[in-house]
Image (cartoon, rainbow, N blue to C red):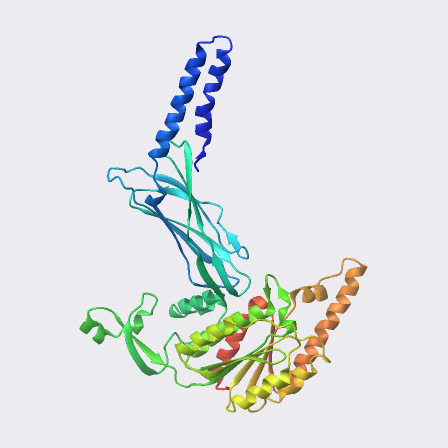
Length: 443
C-alpha cells in the first residue's frame, strides 16, 4: 500500500480553504469538489507512472562466514530496469534490511539514494556479531518515490539468507595483506619473512598486486606474457598443538566477548600462520572432558578443518579437567611439539591441578600457558584510591594479582613458558612468542 508524502498531504489539504469558503459562498463547494477529484486523479496518475516492484531488483551481498567481534560489511545492491525503454528518470529509494537481532549494527538506518536507469546502487552497513553460531537474515524492505513525489511505494523483497559466525577471519585476511606488503610491524608483530619466502623453491604462480616486485620471475614472465611470481617453501616443519580450556572460567566476559572467544580468535590466527609457515597444527578442546581433538597436520586443508573445529567449540559450565585433557594429548601425540594452552587462573590452591599436570608436559613438549589479565583488577590495584571503599578494593586487587603472579612463577620454575596479557594484546603476544620460538629452533 502506498504512503502519502508531505507533498501529497499539502496538495490534498488545498481543498480545505475552498470548503470553508463554501460555507459562505455555496457555489465554491463545487470548485472544492472538483479540486479534490483532480488531486485524487493526480495521485492515481503518479502511482501508475512510478516504477513497479518488478523493475527494481534488490539483493544482499555478504560473506556466508562472518567474523565474531568484527564489523562485517553487508551490502544491499539495487538495480533499476524499467520496462519502458524511453524511461530515463532516476528513482529515489530507501532500503531497510532485517539482520539477526543479536548483531550490533552501524550505518543501517540511512540506506538511501538515487538510482538511474540500468544502473546499480549499493549501500553498505556493518554488522558486528558477539557470539559464534548459526544465524539468518530475513527480508529486505524497499520504499521508493513516485515521479511527482506524492507517494512512497513499498515492497518486501524475499531475501532469507543463512550465515555462520566464525572466529575472526578478518584478522587472518589483515595479516595476509600486511605480510605481502611487509608491513606487519604496523600491528606490533615482529619482522618475519614474507609469505612463501623460505629457501626452497615451491612453485610458480600469477603475480598479485600485493606481492613484492622482487618476487617476479622474469624468464617465466617473458614466456607467458603476464607477471609470474615465485613461491618458496619453509625450511623446517614443526608441530603446534593448540589446547583450549572451554570450562567455566573461560565463560567470563571481557567487554562484549567471553574469554573463550578471544582465545578461539587467537587460536585461528595462530593456526593460519603456523600452517602458512609449513608447521603441523593440531587442536585439543576440553572442559571436564575432551570435547574435540584434531590431529596435527599441515597445509591449507588443515587450516580449513581447524576453522570448522574452532567454530564448533562452545563453553561449558564445568571445571576444566587438566588431568584428562593432557593425558589424552600425551596418548594421541608423543613427539616433540609446542603446546599453547589457553586457560585462566584464580588462586594458587585452585590452580594446583593446572601446575601439576602442565608441568608434566616438560621436557617432551614445550608448553606455553596463555592467560588473559583482568584490566579492572589491574586498574583497582594501581590507581590511587579516592575513598575508604576504594582502599579495600585496592588491597583485594593487589592480593589477587600477587596470587596470580605466584602461580605463573611456579609454572616458570617447572619449565613452562607463560604469557599473561590483556585480551586486546592476545593476538600480537601469542604470534610474536611463536615466531620467536620458531626462529630460535626451540620447538
